[in-house]
Each structure stands twice: as C-alpha cells, then as structure tokens.
Amino acid sequence: MFVGNYTRNLDNKGRIFLPPNFRDELTRGVAILSKGFDEKCLFIYSIEGWNELIKTITSKVSMAKSTVQKFSRWFYSSANEVPLDSQGRIKIDKSLVDHACIKKEVVLLGVSSRAEIWAKELLDPYLASAEKEFLGNKEAFENLGF
Figure 1 (cartoon, helix red, strand yellow):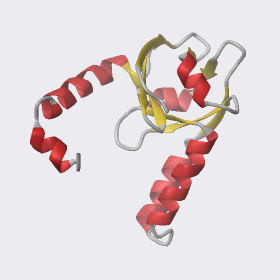
Figure 2 (cartoon, helix red, strand yellow; figure 1 turned 135 degrees about the horizontal axis):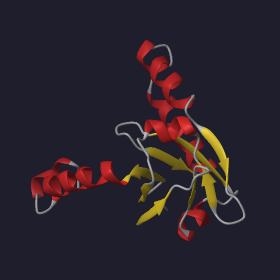
Figure 3 (tube, one colour; figure 1 turned 180 degrees about the vertical axis):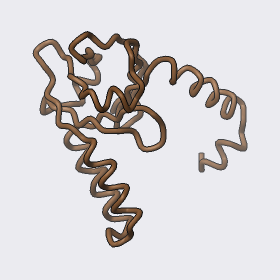
C-alpha cells in the first residue's frame, strides 16, 4: 500500500528518488507512470496495481462508447513503464513533467493502491481546499459512505 507524503526535487535529468516504502511496493522494480485522471498530477502504479486498474476500468464501461475511447487514448497513451535505477530513482518523461506543471520541487503522495506526483505549488492549495471540505465535516464523510 502506498502511504505518506514526501517532498523531493526533480534533478536535471528528470529523475526523482522514491521513498523506500514506495520502492517496496514496486516488487518488480518497475513503475507505471501516467497522467492523473482528475488533477494536474501523475499516477504511479505497480505492475499489479496497473493490471487491476485496467480490469476495473474495462469491466465497468462499454468500450464502444466514444467518450471511453477518447479517455482510453488520452490516458493509456500517456503511460510509461519506468524501471527504478540502482539508487531508487525513476525518470519522468518530459511530456508527463509538462502535464503536471513540474518545475523542480515535487511531492509524492501515497494514495492506497497508487502514488501520485504533484508539483508542490499545485498540491498546497489542493490540500488546503480538501482540509476545508473534510476536517470536522461529518456530513462529507457520510456522503462518502464512511
């Protein structure tokens, strides 16, 4: 399971160090990196997690729908299989760096079955908004089914 919040810097070769517990989740030494669905961030999946995501998506939607085709082309074409190097770093493709508006400082978030990479300047206001929405809001948790 991916958990935690870690600040890192993108080096001049487009690499970041993954925290040890994230590396432990990538049991085959490979990460699948893709665009995030809903925000300007990147998703990190293990191969097993990626395969589960694909199963979930394809079992819930009709591939005949044009919006599903459009989403599939947009999302899956952004995905890269990225090996961890001997120091526990991954290299982020320039197109993904640009998509996530990453300049230098990034935050890696553990989000259960995946991790996310955010430009720090985009994540800070997002988390502040989430805290305002959820902190002490019993109704918000009931709406989520908790």
